[in-house]
Length: 467
Image (cartoon, rainbow, N blue to C red; front, side):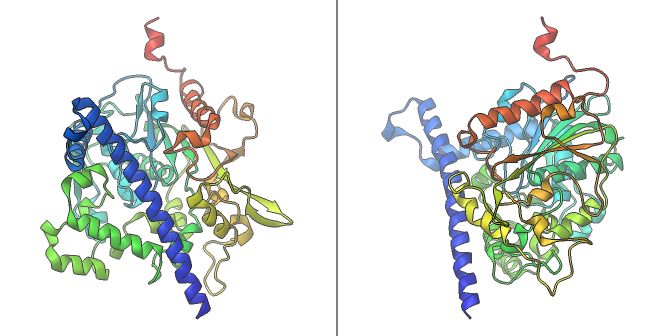
């Protein structure tokens, strides 16, 4: 009984912290947009437009801009920044940047907006059509198995329509975004997009920033069952998340969904489609993405990642680099958080919990050779062991980088990985938290893409060509 009560208290604290942080991010974005809209109108304070009106204009403009596409052409290859779970691309949450403005460091950077909670598979399909253009096709078989429509949003013009072997791209994926790129890369190699003759050489480089390459034990704390990595506990944080997302999508308030979207439109959960009885079915778990398992959390368990990794290769002509973040250290042989002030308040408890994770004795091990102690170091969301390079079910070619000179010249087909001090959100949303580290990290990533990751010769930048 005491353990049950303790669990409820922990759930309440965790839910409150996440809600407060979500409200902070959302309200900050709203306040900034309203303030900018009011300033642009030149109206006095009392004559400013009501909040909803300002947000409608911002959201509608962003949606239209994303649909038509900001088209890039030719060389050098664009750098595509791919967000993680609960993330957002350019145009969502108004003028807020998921990558904290890192996209401004280069003239040819794209920041796609993908489903923030949709499965790795669905996000990979969306990413392809965002770049190439056309209507998102989730695949006949996949759509039938998971019970959603085959086709999704339409990109009138892709953001990089010339994308092919001769015009490849650099990808930078944060958190789950790294795994999205890996799945897309495999789809390109398997020519999985009807009407497009794709290949693995469409991807020039992949940089993983705190990437979920092998899953995380955090999913089990949040509510996924360690026994199978697919089912949810009946009372947990993820169940609260599930209920909130279902109601949000069922209400289907256009301007609000343009402002932030979980990405489940292809499941057609709107009241306009399913009515009140459909809402009941969704809440009871009879239909929808949480019923079929076609959402991101099952993909982030160790078992789910193993299943995905078993189908993905590391390709010989692509350059790989990963940054694994860590906010833990050893104290008298025990793994503990390395700092109190250096960890985001939302993540400190999570860092501590993940240090203490022990796989249930009555549950089968997620993979052969699994040891709890290997998974203790973490950044509050992902285990450090998961972020270095793909290692389950088989270990991919890799090399630890202590000094940047260790990877010069850069060789394709090898996962160069570097461990850095930081929590999971140090290098996103709020650049002030990381300080000079922010610039050092992203400047290093962009320089590597521009000067060290190439197949023939370094590309010429537009400003260099004009000189």
